Image 1 (cartoon, helix red, strand yellow):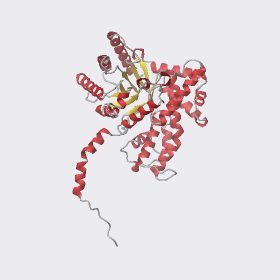
Image 2 (tube, one colour):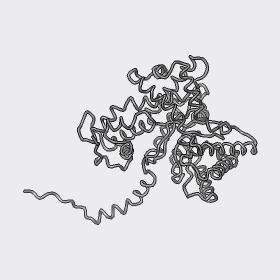
Image 3 (spheres, rainbow, N blue to C red):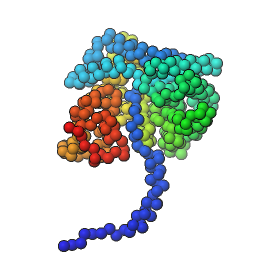
Length: 431
C-alpha cells in the first residue's frame, strides 16, 4: 500500500503567508463587507420640501388609484403595459394592495432643484416647517419606511446654504421628536470630487459632536450627476474613490438622469435613463458599489402619465419598460416624481419578481437539498437566488407563505442566506 502524499510547505511558511496578507484581509473586510441585510426601497419619491404634508403619501396613493380606475382598472393596466396574461391577475391584485398599504417606500423632501432658490429667511422658514410636519407624521406613525431631505450641493455658491438647511432640518427633528428616525436618509447632490465627500464627512462629524449624537449616526447618499465623478482628470473612476472616502457613511449611489446627460451635451429630447451615456455611468457605479453593501439607484423619467388617455397610457408603457430594464440590469431602485408613476412602479416590480419566482425558488431548493436539477449552482449563485427571492418578499411581490412552500425557508432564514458570509452548505429547508 502506497503512503498518502504529505504537504511539503511548513507551518512556518503558512504563518508567514498569513502575516503578509493580514493588511489585505483587513482592507477587504473593511472596504467590501458585502450586503448586510439592509432593506432597499424600490423607489425614491421626490417632492419640493415646502409642499410636504403629513398626508402626502396617502394623497399620492389615492390620486394614483383614482387614475387607474378612471383609465380602465388594474387588470387592464397590467395587461396594457405588457405583463404576460398568466400573471395579470396576481400582479394586478398585489400592485393594487401595495399602493393601498405603502404608496411610498422612500420619500425625499427636496430643498435643491425641486425647491429652487429663495431668500435665506424664506428657505429657513420652509425647512423648519417641513421638519415640524415630519415630526407630526412620526408621532402619528404616518411616515414611509424611509424619509429624509436633499439639500443644496457643496459647490461654492450654494455650500453654506446647503449646510444651513441640513443643520436646521436635523436640529428641528431632534428638538421636536427627541431623536432621529431610523429610516432617515440624507441625499448629497451634484458631487463632483472626492474632496466634497470628505467635506460632507467632516460636516456630519461636526454636527454629531455639537448635537450629542453617536459617531457615525449620520449617513448619506451620493447623487452622481456630473461626469467628473465617473472619470476624473487622471482617468480613474473617482466615484469608487468617493464612496470609500465616505468613511462608511455612504449608503447609496443615485444616478441623476438629466443633470448628467446635460453635462455631456445630450440634447434634451434624447436625455433618458436608457441613453448610452447613462448606461456607461451606471455600469461604473455598479462596479464601484459591488461588495461594499452600498445600494445603487437609477434615476427618473420626466415623461409623466398626464394628459389624454392616449398620452397617459404611452407614458405608463414607457415607465414600465424603463423600470423593467433597470431591474434586469440589477438596479433595484429608481426615482418617481408624480403620483401617476406609482402604479407602473409597482406593476413592473411585482411582475419582475413573480415572473421568476418559481424558477428561482426551484433552483434554490434543489441546491439546498442537493437534489440536482438542470442547473449546477454554486454557493455565490445560491446567495444571489436568495437575495432575489427576499427582495420579492420585501416589496410585497410574494408572501412569506409562498416562500416557505416553495423553498422551505421563512423570510428571516432566507435573508440570512442572502448575505455574503452565509454558510449555504448548512442551510436545510424545513418541509
